[in-house]
Length: 128
Image 1 (tube, rainbow, N blue to C red):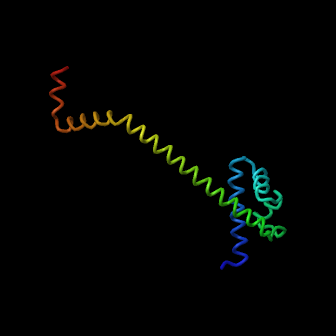
Image 2: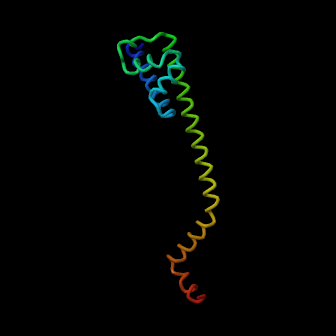
Image 3: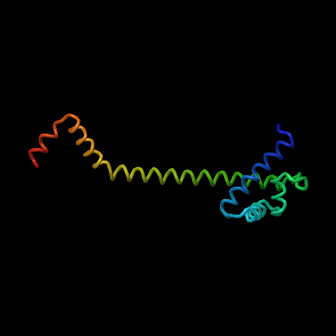
């Protein structure tokens, strides 16, 4: 089983990840502290101190710690859902691209094969 210090460090890492994500969304570190603090049920000041390892926020209540873990899990689930949606969109775009270009690529392959074998060149001269 993990020691109390390991659990505290893990909770701190999770809180820091929540703050980084919120900062990316809001564009402001202070707004990120506010957002994470509100989600966890603590003050923005406490989150800031806790993430920084400030001795004033060395301890975390069980309720706050559990809230940090739950928020982090939700963040991970949201990130995975966004990634899956992006994969789905990318696959759909590639299918559309393949469908739109399959005929053109077949023609290019046919012309390339004919040019490589030299069978196409005399026919083009006669037509010209």
